[in-house]
Structure formats: structure tokens, C-alpha cells
Length: 191
Ligand SMILES: CC(C)(COP(=O)(O)OP(=O)(O)OC[C@H]1O[C@@H](n2cnc3c(N)ncnc32)[C@H](O)[C@@H]1OP(=O)(O)O)[C@@H](O)C(=O)NCCC(=O)NCCS
Image (cartoon, rainbow, N blue to C red; front, side, top):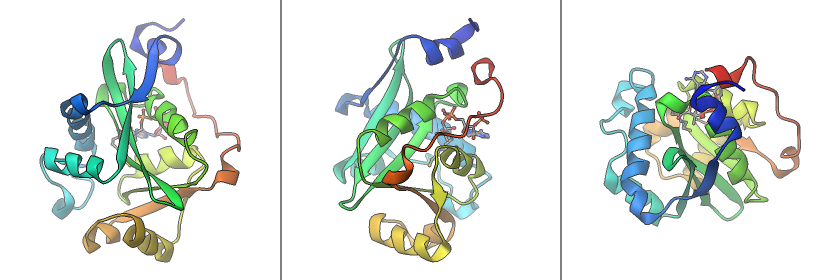
């Protein structure tokens, strides 16, 4: 069996559970640590520090974003939110602690959230965040056209015009959920 934490995440005790109100600071910590990946990548006028202030996180939760987390040995490794929007569900704020990225945490959270809805799932991310786009594509999500992206972001998200210009939307329809996932390349457990 591979050594280290990676094998633990893959094979041992890990729990996916709904985050609690008392974990706001931890959720915020994970988001702001992982969001460092955007620094220097997304347009400078879209970057802010902290990337997500506490008030914004509270607002998102009040607005219906439900956060789930993967816990390993009592530590939250990653979080992912889901927001019901009537005819569709949105994946919101997917972040994994940098040290634990690329070890399958995001995949497990995404699969868990997908299992909770029969609706088409939409996810919006920065056009420049190529790794995030690849992550979703590997899970069967498909980039929508520019026109559709503009329509969907205006309808389901509350984001400024500039963010619409610099974002993409990916979609996964319910009939695509049972498609086999493209296997990831390489030995993930050793990274
Ligand atoms: C995107 C993110 C949530 C994925 O979670 P994760 O636990 O790292 O993802 P998994 O281990 O399940 O899947 C890894 C896959 O994601 C993609 N990926 C994730 N991080 C990557 C990186 N830094 N560079 C390249 N690809 C990356 C790759 O497709 C990778 O597949 P590979 O390991 O075969 O190369 C996480 O990497 C993260 O928090 N990134 C920074 C913040 C971010 O971009 N959030 C997305 C908001 S929509």
C-alpha cells in the first residue's frame, strides 16, 4: 500500500459531510488558501485579498449555498457548495487545501454532490483557471457556448459584468451522469 496521507485519503477513514455553522472560519481558510491559485492568473482587477471575505461567505450561505466537506482524521481537507436554483443546481466554491490537491478530494466531493440532485448541474469558473476547467471536464462537464454562458451567469449567478466576461460555465445533464469517467492519468496516490 502506498505510504503517506494520500493512501489514507484514497482508502482509509474519510467522511464527506455537511459543514456546520461553527466551521465558517475553516471553510473560509480553505477557500482563501486554495484561491491563491488564481493570483496572477485571473485578471488583476478580479483578484482581491482575501479572495473571499467572511461577509461574502455568510451572504453565499444565506443565499442558499450549502457547503459539504471532506474530513480526514478530524481535519477538513476540502469544501464544495451546492446551490439549488429551481430548474438547475449549481456547484459553488470548490476548494481543496493546496497540500491535498490532486489526490482525489475534489473528485469525491463532486461525486457526492452529484448524487444529491437529479437536476442539470452548472458550474462557473474563471476562464483562466484551466486546471479547474480540466477537473470538471474529466467528470463529464461540457463548456457551454459564450452566448449560453452569458445567459446562464445572468440568470443564476449574481456576478458583475466584468466577471461574466472573464468566466466560463460548464454543464452536466442528468442523462450524462451515468457515463463512465475518463480515468485520470498517472498514479494519483503518490502525488
Ligand atoms: C480544482 C480543485 C477543487 C480540484 O480538487 P482536487 O482535489 O485537487 O482534484 P482531484 O484530485 O479530484 O482531481 C485532480 C484533477 O483536477 C485537475 N487539477 C486540479 N488541480 C490542478 C492543478 N494545480 N494543476 C493541474 N490540474 C489540476 C486535473 O485535471 C487533475 O487531474 P490529474 O491529477 O490526473 O492531473 C482543487 O484543485 C482546487 O482547490 N484548486 C484551486 C481552486 C480552484 O481552482 N477551485 C475551482 C473553483 S470552480
